[in-house]
Length: 348
Ligand SMILES: *[C@@H]1O[C@H](CO)[C@@H](O)[C@H](O)[C@H]1NC(C)=O
Ligand SMILES: *[C@@H]1O[C@H](CO)[C@@H](O)[C@H](O)[C@H]1NC(C)=O
Ligand SMILES: *[C@@H]1O[C@H](CO)[C@@H](O)[C@H](O)[C@H]1NC(C)=O
Image (cartoon, rainbow, N blue to C red; front, side, top):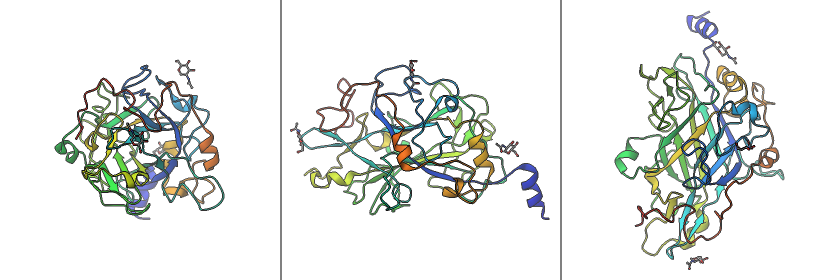
């Protein structure tokens, strides 16, 4: 037996890559990480995951959730980003609808499709290798954010290779990434990409800016990440989101001045893209999956290597939370929810 095999057996070292869909659980102005307890929070979010989602979230979410919009039934985590809006040249706004990953959301049968939502990834150092290191799951209560709504320079965007956009020529386009919103109409919409940092300080569940307890070695895409620094020595799973925004429904309303008409819900341009993660896998379920060598849908039952329990799109779509903020976020709006008093920093 080779030394590597012995090492793998001794250390439990393996490499798994999870990729799964979560349908939308809520679209509202709540932010239990950045603005806990504030109802409403500053800007509109689109949220997926477990039904313990609330204005304030402390403790072990994995033990509190009773349903989830994610394909894996033990995942009560919450995942969210800002919402993309179309700004009509007459000044009105309309929410851009989301659609699921074409390889996960609809099987072409009569079964219902997944409702909006996102694709979530948990990978190792890259898709194929953990670099011979143990990849840890997060502890209960763990949370983090990536990106910043106040970022508004191309330099910031260039310095964050994990935050990107893809102009979708078809629902399966991948690879061609930009630091800003695509400047021309995209036939199948815009994919917003968020890769979180994967090096943890090993101590803090959070930090004042929700980022300093983490360190990123992400080089963008799913390329191999570099080693973790001594300040943040613990390699945790590399979490990433892909959100498909169906901007194509506005193709006949592209402004006459040629400028791209999309804004984030904080009235922000593409550089301010950001995302939030609140860990909530039940018990040791995430670690169980990371310890295995399963890849994508093979991680779920009834797959041959299935280590995680799955549910149908119908069951995912059924899980819901109450809207704590009573306001209109859909249809044509004269202003973005919560943005009335904010100067229109990015108008242009
Ligand atoms: C994962 O692997 C580590 C290292 O071998 C081991 O200590 C731990 O018990 C395993 N956890 C699960 C849930 O399989
Ligand atoms: C949300 O938080 C409020 C106040 O703490 C609590 O009364 C309510 O039960 C919580 N809802 C959920 C779904 O956890
Ligand atoms: C802007 O245009 C849209 C689409 O035609 C329309 O529904 C909306 O009412 C218009 N808003 C204003 C302020 O005219």
